[in-house]
Length: 128
Image (cartoon, rainbow, N blue to C red; front, side, top):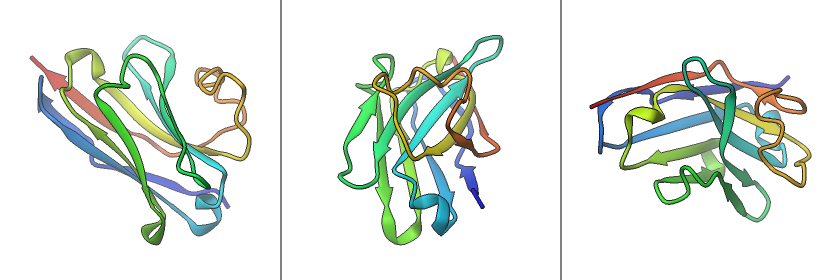
């Protein structure tokens, strides 16, 4: 059974940092790819960062690639998203998700969610 639990969300002032955690069941953690996604108020869900569990290869959206870092701790079945220099436009619900297969455009199915299994999400609010 797919199981993903996000934590670490909260409220932070612009310019600050947060570190999100996505803890998976052992079964889910063995998915090939685990990613972080965000849904801002009134907007479609977008992809932020994905990690290929085997090699640690990472993929980032242009909007976050210089500020966010995705990493994994295999012993804890956990994938992290370190977010630095946060901006008010980073506000939203952050989800982690797992998939066995990645499209050639890694974030192309973020909005529909097709092919991904999802956690419940954690709220991040960045205030100016």
